[in-house]
Length: 117
Image 1 (cartoon, rainbow, N blue to C red):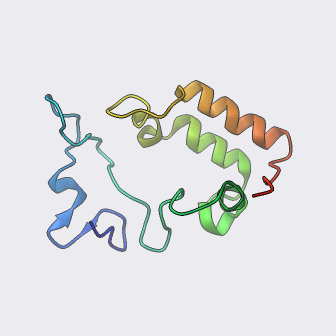
Image 2: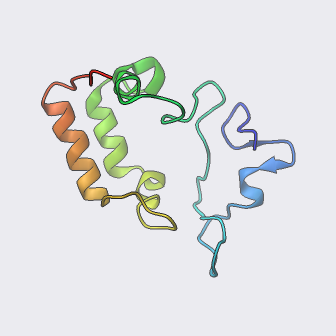
């Protein structure tokens, strides 16, 4: 797949070709969401090839996240509908959305320290 400049696919490989506005019934179908997209081409997938330290540095960088503050990062992980959707469909993360938000808040409230590695 090619994310394209807007993060919604390129040419015949538009996200919406497979990802509909709602989840489709049946096994092994792509998840759906009205605003399905990847980050823009200028912003790589947040976890791709990063160490924990590099990932934490990215979360703290407003140029990378597009957020002016870490409070906006909390707002994003807590309320963005696409983030919420990732905790309810298909292969889910190894923790609940509430636990994820709590860990992000804890990290920020304790000073958003960078891991050694």
